[in-house]
Image (cartoon, helix red, strand yellow):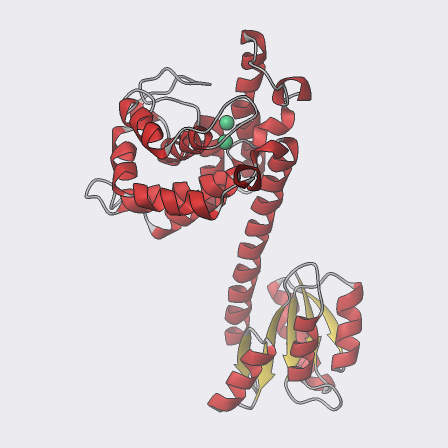
Length: 337
Ligand SMILES: [Fe+2]
Ligand SMILES: [Fe+2]
């Protein structure tokens, strides 16, 4: 990872480089704020360590300038400072600094703080990646309005409700709920590989076409599995893959693509399955009218243990009022007219 170091004192630049290069960072140098901005506008660099006091543009001015520019990715700014009063820190934070290290700096502390910065940036990368993949899904199926957002929110509410029950307390933590929320919009990512003639067909699909459509589950899981091979520690990719692969499985084993049964179906997929169907039922599509929430509830309750996990259905009944709020909040424009 590249780091831009900014200081008017060559000795400090030297010491910084001496700490950062052995730790695996690539270092770019600037002697003042103006030069730093120039480098940032030319080179993709997401980490900046800057001195606070510099002639001309100070570290604080540099922070403000960085925040006011529209860089493609977030730039993490760490200020080196001998100003450690509360007022100065607040001033630094308001200007947009992310962290502070006292001068003279302790190399070990600096590296630890940088690792925290890299972690923040990687979280941002994860969200940007998920968002662009979800947008890709949407681009193939533009008729579905706010479907992805609604499914995302319904899924979170369900996961949250389940986490309160004795049985799921140890299985569902805050991170799992967050990952279900983040990755559920990718459930139909495999539709990118389904031909238009099937995906956009206005009428009912023939059984052959339906077989082609079903493939969106395996296509999606293959795509995410290959990303997972490269980043095996990325839990968000595991959850995303589970959801893409298994959101059409049914609790009694009659779903697709693998005919998984009961708890063989990953929990995240059992949750998204209900959220996805609820949304499909309660929204108008080209080929059908919307069902009322009451009818939808009846259909879901009647499918407890067959299509859906009974525990997820129970969670749904307990938090159905939240579904009403989400449905209203993300109502499609076409439904309003
Ligand atoms: Fe699907
Ligand atoms: Fe869907």
